[in-house]
Image (cartoon, rainbow, N blue to C red; front, side, top):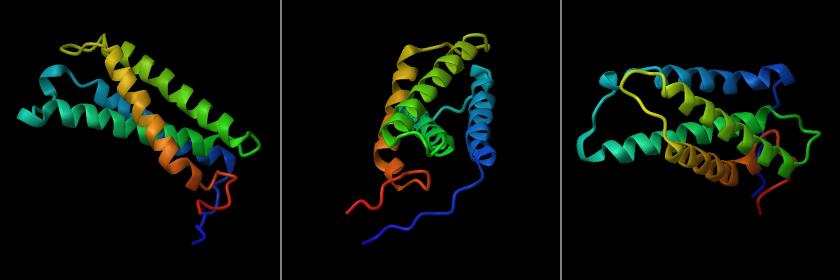
Length: 134
């Protein structure tokens, strides 16, 4: 089964999803600890899963924004590196927010989420040079 690729956006517009996701992550990280919902038994799973999912999407947004002239593997690793750098900066930012703390564990979860998302979805990106997955 051949896979269909969506048309590519012009280079500057390809960065819009990444900037939107970074703004959302920054806004959520700015919430004081007292304003965060508590999910009872599921709290840790939902919050850490949210980290992995959000940063997974951010990694894919970076991958899609990077120029096609770069090799697939270079874009993949650069997208992962950029995601981890943003995760580090986000944790630093959180250390200044009342009732919040920074955690290297969250950075690991963020990087893991990005790596898994890139492994699964990057080959299907309209910014991928691959022809098919079959």
